Image (tube, rainbow, N blue to C red; front, side, top):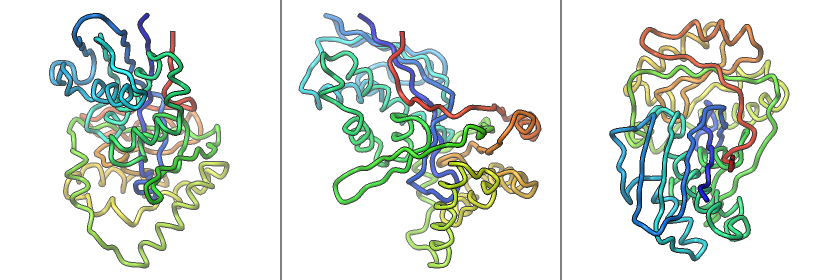
Length: 295
């Protein structure tokens, strides 16, 4: 029988939490797959339709194959349909959603898949495929996560989020590759900046857990956003404008989307009204579930 999963968009870094902090958002890709006796069939609607590969190089397919291999299974054929809502190359975790969604599909299509590929192993395999865990962890586990690597082992831990916290994302009409954005980060930073960033990241965990009045201070970044300004000056200009008005705004992931934290309904409309011409603004809840099988 076909299996359908939904997987959330994510925002990583959140200002000072470079390559460590991530948040799942209530915006989802929907993936449906079934095992067949034929060849691979891939269809795509929504984001990426007409541009994404429809063969074994498709990221969802590659992730499914990695999941099957981890479980010691080789399917005779797969029919896959992707209904994508997460913007591509905008800093909202579209590649992580594809990876986590593909692994979740493979797990759901295999008998005893939950036992053969438990959540911790799914996150680790997803991080191996993505190269870093900050987006795949919230995509898999939901909510707010702290993730990283210790030696050869990936780790990911959920942390609480105050139910008052919501976000507004400002999505520009232009894209930015993660590789380009990462290439602008220097190999070393001043010790004072690193110390300040560590303090802000710790404060951000507390602010999201129950002290959202500290979110503006907690989202001050010293490690990556300013270095990326040449690649996305309009995004950083919007961050500067919002923060000058007391809004806790950051670059989402590698950008160029801007994310702003808000704490109640009226704030969402007021902040969304700051959307630049040609961009789109959207208020979103935090997704507390992560990837899940539906239907």
